[in-house]
Amino acid sequence: MGKLSSVFSMRHFLVLSLALNVCLISRVVYEGENWREEEQSRALMADASQKSAHVSRSSPTPPSPSTVTSPEIKDDGERVINLDHGDPTMYERFWQQLGDITTIVISGWQFTSYFSDAKNLCWFLEPDFSKQIIRLHKIVGNAATDNYHIVVGTGSTQLFQAALFALSPPDASEPMSVVSAAPFYSSYPSVTDFLKSGLYKWAGDAHNFNKDGPYIELVTSPNNPDGSIRQPVVNRSGGILVHDFAYFWPQYTPISSPADHDLMLFTLSKATGHAGMRLGWALVKDKEVAEKMTKFIELNTIGVSKDSQQRAAKVLQVISDSYEHVGNPKKGSPFFHFSHSLMEERWNALRSAVKQSGLFSLPDFPSGFCNFLGLPFRSQPAFAWLKCAGGIEDCGKFLNKHKILTRSGKHFGVSPEYVRVSMLDRDDSFSLFIKRLSSLRLSQSKDHEEESL
Image (cartoon, rainbow, N blue to C red; front, side, top):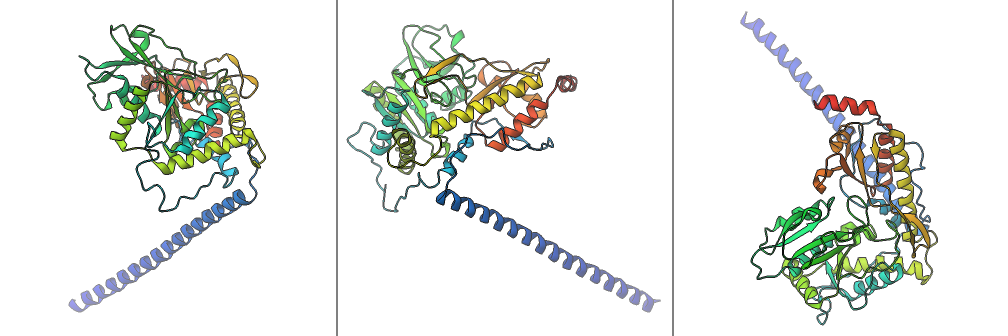
């Protein structure tokens, strides 16, 4: 019996060993195949990147704005379309197709100093960048620059904070009120109150502001999120205005005359699509205010990246050169003509999808003549201010169910019936969004309403 048990155990041991070895060999083969597939994928991606780089450097295709007329896109409803952020990746195609025209080389020994121009009020502003900012504004005609001080910042968000610091009295008995008309930019409240400063605090919708005393009103025009052209709302003595002109460029709205307000904010991200450079600039009339803003940035980040400023200067130079016909610019639409046509095409597609669905509505914008482009057109904002119909109380929640991510109106100080939709995503995402939005029907809204009960 003991012998039989020993034999039986040995047989089990051999079977178990054989099974383990088979499993091990299968796993090695499987992982080897996966490794080879991954390596092949990497190689294909690298090859595609090299081919793309080669094509862009040797024979760039003239930029064409057409996207929504591309071949039919299949949608199984499973891909998440994230249009919550205003990430301006729409512009990638234009700059890729221009090849290396905006390429610069920065040697290791360059820009070791904190200082760009020690004699300048904003001592960390690169002279080349300052020169190209002034040049572009004069060409486009969207802002006066004579008798203004330029303050550069790490995006317009830092400049916004610098402006609040510079405009708030340091010895006031209570914080300065900061207001903006709803719907206002969703980051204004959080950025204003983030540092819990004793100098200023968020005071909400400018339409409802009735407090006596000084205040700062933020005027965003065209407005984020709804694209409307804005004027001050409070209009009382003691008020100070900050004009946010992130979207005051000819691809978004007609440029009829140069803006000439006391303090104007601009950002590279929405002007040219280079959000990753993290650069913005302020045009400031008052020297003392510009000095205080510069001091804030000095204490906050000890200046602004010189590398980014040099890259930005080159980008702005290329845009301006194409309109002043300097050198031998590449054929194809210049930047603002390209981006204007692309925004026009996207807005036409969105309005068609909204009409086809019947579940949504969009604002109507008046037409104006653009002196820069030499033609009349309606505003075509960087964001769509979409309102749900059909009894849908929470538009963001409804769209989220269909895997379309947007930003709810409640973040902008208004009803969740509204959502902000980015119009600046890549071509494939935007085309898929148009296709999916146009397929939504009233019956789906009723199903959503029943599920919410």
